[in-house]
Amino acid sequence: MTTHAEHPDGGREGASRRAFLAGSSLALLAGTVGATTAARSAFAAPASPHGAPAGRAAGRTARAAAYAHPGMQHTAAQLSAAADHVAAGAQPWTAGWDRLVANGRSAATWQPRPLADVIRGGTGENYAQMYPDIHAAYQNALRWHVSGSDAHGAAASRILNAWSGTMRSLGGNADRYLAAGLYGYQFANAAELVRDRSDFDRGRFADMLLGIFHPMNEQFLTHHNDAVITNYWANWDLCTMNSVLAIGIFTDRSDLVQRAVDYFEDGAGNGSIRHVVPFLHDVDGGLGQWQEAGRDQGHTMMGIGQLGAFCEMAWNQGIDCYGYDDNRFLKGAQYVARYNLGNDVPFTDYTWQSGPNTTPPHVGWSTHTEVSSDSRGQLRPVWASVLAHYSGRKGLEAGWVAQMAQRVRPEGGGGDYGSTSGGYDQLGFGTLMY
Image 1 (cartoon, rainbow, N blue to C red):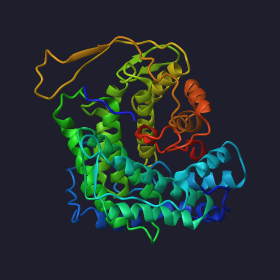
Image 2: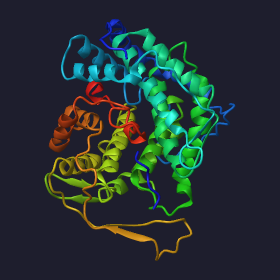
Image 3: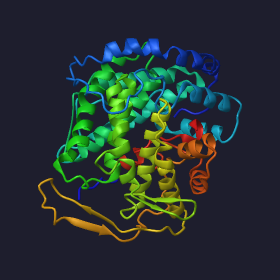
Image 4: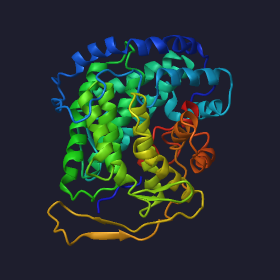
């Protein structure tokens, strides 16, 4: 089965941007329809040097044609709230802010190293030059919003502009699809935070997302690299779904948003909700066995982060994937958290087929018979947003998730959990933002 390879400036700036955000958040939301109408006229037509594709036909369920901006993993209201908490010195937000400031990628002096041709997997692999730049752009954008320091906003724009002005292809072995998913959605989230800055080339960045990343996302969701449908673990689908959703929001493409949410609901691959949580156990208030639980816990927790990002982006556009199928994601998160806190969990045998799509139906089958202890107890910055929604917004019992969130608090970000690509699978900083 194809696998996913595992992967200085300090001090707190003034909160001058806090008042602006607080006063403008309602205006941003109220002005969404007019603003996004203009954006659609710029982005719906795919003429670009990257060769962006035409849109898909509408699916079975109507989705909003106008989107709130910023409106992916963070809204204007969330950014304003974070600024208020930090300005007041409130905990645990201030601890989360200090973690952000201490991360070397959040320095306004960060210099990007863009590549024309990025390769993940196989000969000439060089993608490790890309993901630190993405996280540097995201982290600088957060510092700009929370502190008001324009140097950080300018740094984020500079990094993103360098990549959209240079990158022309993404290749490699099967891992190129992981790169297209992970870095497509992360790029889009960083860009969303600076989308209205005059020094950011939004149109060119949209062309890059639509011309390079999205076609690979769609190819994977449709064909799964010409493999049988169960060949790829859930995290492959999840990061790809994230990229389609994030690109759709950034470019105001209703067809892409609908494609991503429809796939979440009933897609054929392991990222759709009933496949990523294939078995429900009627114990401990309801636990949902995660698709990769028999593989290892590192990738299982990566999946929590990926699906958490998906649900948060959808929620911030008025689409409730968190609550879909009687809060199925919560049951999966509770299962993973309970086990990684050192407790037993029930397990149903999980059987899957691997190989190319020409594999005969009677060969290539494997079965997990127990939950895996590999990487058990690993810390990843994936829990704060899940807890904030189910316990904070909805008032639901999420005790195991709460314990995991407390264990990781304050959440860091890219580079704080390992120097290889696995340490950059999540954008992080949930303690500050949620």
